[in-house]
Length: 104
Length: 205
Image (cartoon, rainbow over all chains, first blue to last red; front, top):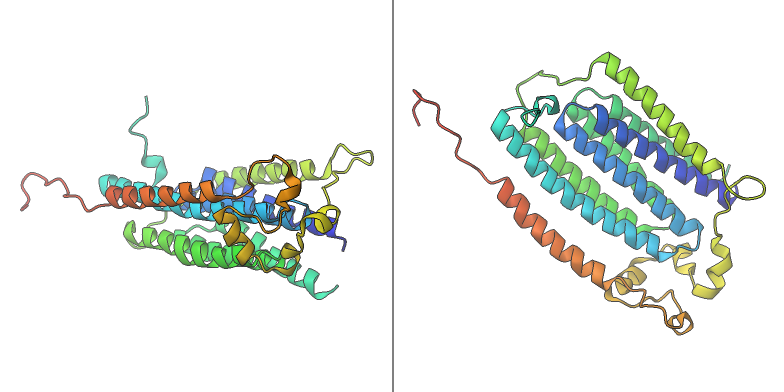
């Protein structure tokens, strides 16, 4: 395999992760399921960054950006989970279909 | 097929199948398990791409931190045994159809390029390998260059030949992310604090 086809294989893996994350975010009724979709999307982006860092002249920058994405994803998961816990404390459910109090 | 492509195929399959299993699992604990499989295989892909520190950080922070946090969230929001918040079959079919379409769109955008043979020409790393010493990526020994870049100096750039370019270090984003983590810590702890439940009339407080 040439280096080019390996790069495209990495990008395909990143694309599959991204699409699975988006479908998860769109179709899951469990609030924590939606959060798992967000994690999948961020991992897809990370795979892209690391692949470009290896196979193009992006170099170290791609890996630095991947590290920042990992850190920010952890922070965002913490806050999102705090929101889900609050929602559960108030409504005793995490079904996102029940979050319709702001409906006009 | 040499060892590297065999390992890459195995871990790429594990990643993709784990992600698809996350979409199609009906209980959230099973989704967490498949997500662990998928993210662990992603860390293996990072190791294959000579990103040793990013792979180790993925295992430590993502799998060992964020996923454990999600499982704790599942535990704290458990709403009774055998209660399944499941998507209806019609939504599953629609969701997978839309997902396949989306994947085809993304993959088509990778294959169709603007070059003369209608393929995308990625800038090759061998062009600048001699100039900028990106052999540090090739060896996988990225911990020290990464640490130095967070402090503001780039051992893989020849700063004398950069002319009047701005410093390519990552000190400012590093500081910003540190403050960001502190704020998130305080904010999440405040948001998730134990609150007094409103007392219903007629019950013992």
